[in-house]
Amino acid sequence: MSERRGKRRRSVDVFFNKYLGGHPHLCRAVDVSETGMHVVVLSEPDGAMESFPMELRLPGDSQTLWLWGRCVRRKDRKQAIEFVGLSDETRHRIECFVRAA
Image 1 (cartoon, rainbow, N blue to C red):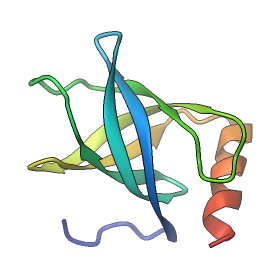
Image 2: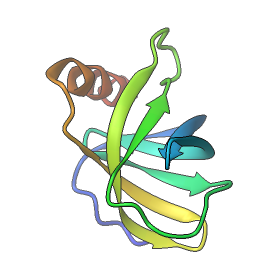
Image 3: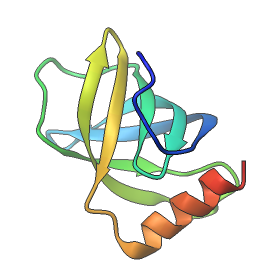
């Protein structure tokens, strides 16, 4: 995928769950920014969903983040996911994680 994000990003290698149709599907986050993340989908049903919940624990964080996202680009098994509707607390936790890089 070409570089399109204007925000700082932090490389990660962390597994997380993306919930589609109420069922968890394992994905791997490759990098995280304040506005979204680049992921590799390991297993997921066909058919795009408008938005979906995700369960993510950032490295070094003891608490799980529950996020909503939407896929803005996809190519093969790679996806760019934009965060939507983040609470101020969740946004702050992600910003602190990215800036600590």
